Amino acid sequence: VEGNVRPINDLMATLDKQDSAIHFAMIQEVLDHYKKRKKPDSVSVTYEKMMTFMGRRDPNVLNDYAWYLASNTHDGQRALAIANEAVAKQPDDPNFLDTRAVAEGNLDKFDEAIRDEEAARKLAPKQDKSYFETQLWHFRDMKAQSHAEMEENTSPKKK
Image 1 (cartoon, helix red, strand yellow):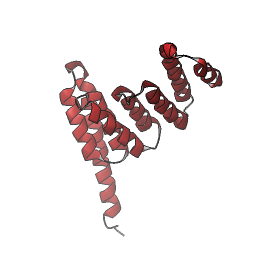
Image 2 (cartoon, helix red, strand yellow; image 1 turned 60 degrees about the horizontal axis):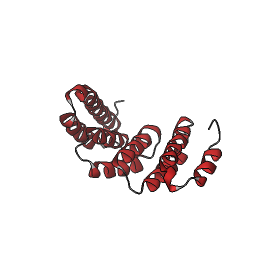
Image 3 (tube, rainbow, N blue to C red; image 1 turned 90 degrees about the vertical axis):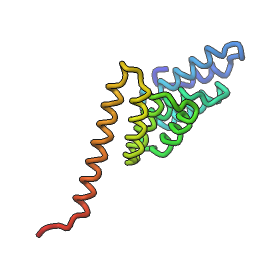
Image 4 (cartoon, rainbow, N blue to C red; image 1 turned 90 degrees about the horizontal axis):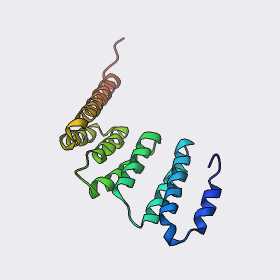
């Protein structure tokens, strides 16, 4: 799949139902191909194709999709919508809450991001808590910087 996914797509078109594991693996190869080449529209289409193939909107796939959008695109609203869908399906997964927090942070929804990171930290296994604490600090810092910038822009200028 060096620069062209057409051979894989052509092969997938020939597969039978009993070849579903091979088909799914090929979809993942196509997804990896587009991610490496930073083609967000193709990544989105491939995630949707993957879930159609699965016959359901798997929460783990949704979370990966939302994380990709939040981390690699400027499509924060879509990342948040997909993260919300994943969290609705698995509300106690700290990684899903973290993904939603990243999407919220990208949209300058810092209070919501902080709330989600606090919940994620509480739900996280002990060995993972430091990651979520770091994320929580990051969102608190982003909020403080945003407030400082707003005050600077709204305060009267001295002559």
